[in-house]
Image 1 (cartoon, rainbow, N blue to C red):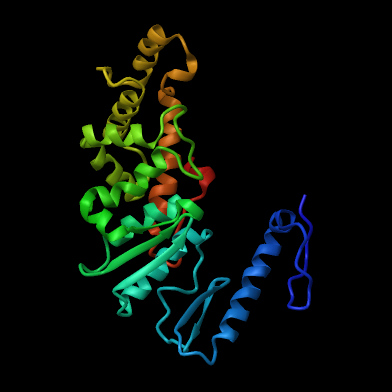
Image 2: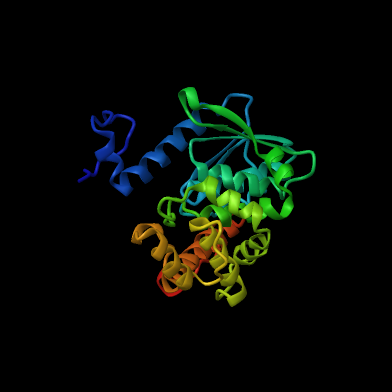
Length: 280
């Protein structure tokens, strides 16, 4: 259980950061405090600063054209970073770097690099310690091609991310290999990326086939309920069979909400999101 603490310059540093960060009000007040301190400390330096400040941004030197950045209603920093990437690109910066330890940010960056001018470079300083490395999002985008790069966030959501469950025992490498052998999945993912109001049957047909192949590469089934029975007969394990069609629909709807509605509007400062209760 966290404890509410007032964040001011004269306060002592919390002894237990985990308890401190469990309280949303603490985090919100801390981020606001840090942004104000950083903006003040750079006031007399020859640097350009744009920093988030609740729904607003602080800029140095003052900028008039910040409509792309604020007011911003994004709930997560992941997508708000992409707003800053787009803003930097529009203001003449051709080389941009993001510092992150989050795979979601890498996936979004590859997709956003697809929208930047041709000569732009979007880099990621990713990881920590021995696992730290630089990733060229723009080069990954080129290797994937425009369609796969645009569909990548939806693929990431479908196969498991922070807000969408994964398929037990079947990781990203397996899913990626299936995607390479099932090109029709790309169109289904792109359709979901457009945040449709409903999941069309042709989309579900392609996703069913994708999920079946993840569980059994030799299966000729096109419906997960049929595949469940056949795979169970061979493996005799409930944990090693695909989800039911009803469960898969709900999984895809959650995927579409995260990948289409939330991530699909990452370049809009004020995205319009349906209620998760109504959508799910």
